Length: 194
Image (cartoon, rainbow, N blue to C red; front, side, top):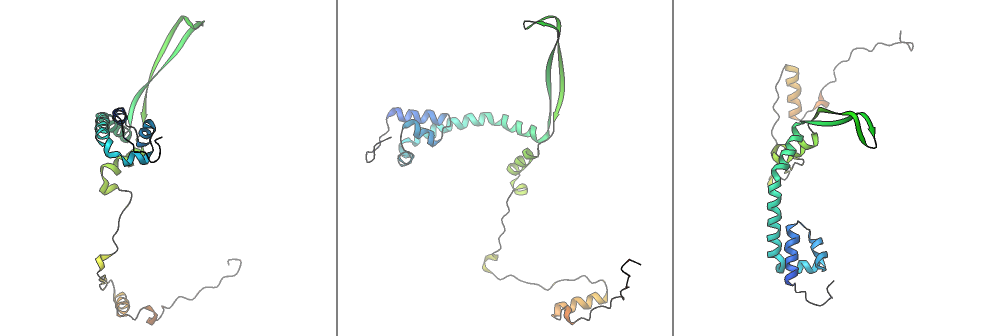
């Protein structure tokens, strides 16, 4: 590590190392370990490395984007399910000292199907159609500082008794002013259920 109080000045070799590590996708931590400097020193002197770091990361990203179609097609295969062939070999005959004598090698090809993966589908939909398949929803309850408007409820009335009850609730009389409906007399039963 660099000595405290001594200003760090990167050498040409340090800058080339930063470029090479960035081309390989190295993290800041790995770059600091390779340069044998503290992470804070690296962050303070980032302006001295930024050109080499950006060029190396650009090359690394180009490499990733070249591989990206393969990754996307593999994800789509997992989302839709796919079929593949599994080949197995079996030896028939006599084996002496690891050598097959008077025999045959039987080769069998089996077609297998991998069903669609729920996790792959969720991942694909959450990333491709964020509006409809997002995991979190944001609700604004503030109403921008304005008071909420309350409107009288609209009732679709079926009969006159329901209409009278709705009008009394809206008027503020509520159910407490209503006389409870008459219930039929309860039938008493003996403890043995007869």
